Image (cartoon, rainbow, N blue to C red):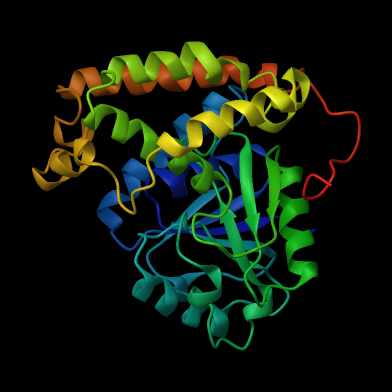
Length: 315
């Protein structure tokens, strides 16, 4: 297997994706158009590699300023991690369609845009799919492997195998639906959380604590479907019948977050969100967050396992 990754975009996501592959023994060519960001990108990649393996290095990283400057010899995979704007992603994929050798899969790291639309009309759309990582990408094991409407089975298998080979937990997503799998689940929770805050049912601290120390605590040992199978589906069904009518079903997030966004209070990166932040506080909490993720990851492999293949559709 070819073992050079091309990653396009050197924000946090692109840098951490590069670190995954460097630690996995690949070389990485990273495209960052702003050469003034190169030093920052190298530092972030080196830090992330060291978090994964103190003995590993980022020596296999090289940076270029444009896709046209890439060397396609031995490239096994291309991943774009540029901003979530459909027009610039489509323009990039059209360029990659022309430049990337025909046997090399091309992936987008979009978290919500449809792969089918990004690759629409391109001659090699069959080798284009989604690889959706989760921040911090090098510490969160899961990667969604998403099929667009034109993505062929061979491309899906290739991307799945590559991600498994570099120590990730690849999850196949068979339909190109908005939000894929993880974000549909995550935003269902967040819609209710924001509504709870708007209605004054609980504080932000209360919401975080009930997830971390309550039902969320169980997820490191078993996912929600397995947990309910173990606990009893009759109980889960009965609870759903009584609770579902009262859950929020709004088509946009509640005022608790909308008002903050309207005021330019985007969280730690602007110094204010649900809490007020100094740069030092934000840095301290991000470092603590990453350290806890590193400590928790080994526990996942010892979690509960279902006895066989699940029934489809409950029947």
